[in-house]
Length: 88
Image (cartoon, rainbow, N blue to C red; front, side):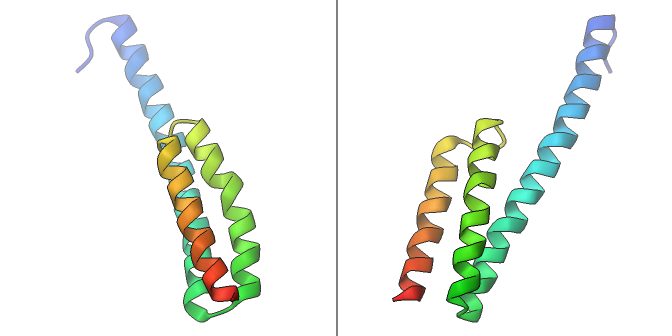
């Protein structure tokens, strides 16, 4: 347990930041899942729409430090490749 005033404030800040990051991570996973579900269903049009929606969400998560920027780029790249394979 935090003893000093500054440590108590830091603990409060960490709790708030954790809640925000958890929300952002959940949103990111939801958008990724929508793309994967469209791919699994074989719906190319829905997959393209979902992919366009997921790209800014992933990049924003990387910018905010929720995930590493290389991780976000890798996810976008792999999803884009799967959507492209579905379209052809």
